[in-house]
Amino acid sequence: MGEHFLPGVDLGAVLGTLRQPSAWIELGVALSCLGLSWVVVRLMRGAQAPERSIWFGRKIVDGVLFPVMALVLAYAAKRLLIALAVPVAVFKIVLPVLISFAIIRLSVRVLHAAFPESKLVKVAERTISWIAWLAMVAWITGILPLLLEELDQIHWKLGGSNVSMRTLLEGALSAGFVLVLVLWVSAAVEDRLLRGATGEQLSLRKVAANAVRAVLVFLGLLLALSAVGIDLTALSVLGGAIGVGLGFGLQKLAANYVSGFVILAERSLRIGDMVKVDNFEGRITDIATRYTVIRALNGREAIVPNEMLITQRVENSSLADPRVLVSTLVQVGYGTDLDTCMPALIGVVASVPRVMSEPGPVVQLSNFAADGLELTINFWILDPENGQGGVRSDVNLAIWKYLKAQGIEVPYPQRVVHQA
Image (cartoon, rainbow, N blue to C red; front, side, top):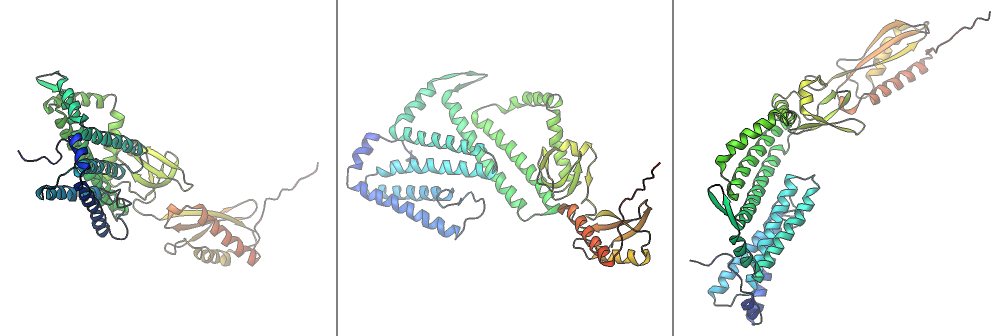
């Protein structure tokens, strides 16, 4: 049997070797490995780290590549020192430390990439760090092998197999590692799919990213259960139970998930569309598998279940044609020359920014009101996501300035009181 990558540590022998002059040689080689790793990662990363990079992180030492590179160099240096008949003591401590560091950075960076907005990532980061460092200390001090032997003595019968506490612990760690890798791959695939996508293309890539993540997490869960030692043939019974649960208690949740994939596949609603749902109007900013986020022009956001978007009437201002008709009213006196005023108003409204020239504005005599002639001005805009109040105000101001400059009367209500 060859030497293991991380053999058991005899703490007494290590402390004895640390007193020898060769320990200084090991320490210098270890520091050289760390410095060389920093330089290599710095050159590979460039002046600025890629956005949301798992390998490089925001800094050099908080990515995955630095501890992995240092671990590889340290292991190669250890083998070289052994070949040169140099007593090895420092590297028996350095290697467990680097392994714990690499596990922590890998888990934390993957969780940050998979769940960038979750507040539980900090808690998970502290938990993983404590477990990794305590395991490293227990390994160096020799407590961990003894603890594993004791856990191996605690076992019981589970179905047709004999399961020990050590098996469950190692299986749980293996399952966690598999799920971290799955989240890493799914986050990388999602980032690659959504990079540079806009509009309709963004919606298509979003459904592909959601489907890839769901499949990878499902496969990772199966591998994790297998690593724990659970017989996957028993999942047929579990699948039947889940089916019954979905049919009763989880039918709303399942309907929202299915509706999310239907919306993304049919492209009836897309990210960036202006919609009105249940008297709430705004722009779609995100379409998840369970819900859709709609942001109103005043900054408020509504989280709408996807089932509601399928079963209820949804007004989409951007589906086929983003043009929106906006109207405003104005009254002029009965003595106004409409043959001159109406064409002039068309030109005034057409000069307002955001008002489309094709189709152009239209001015209509809509009513003979009690106080004056009522004119309806219709015009089109191409950017409803920027709101209608601002452009309507600009049109009204332009009309008011024109009427004031031409001396055209804007009548106000007048009432005659007859005294008995």
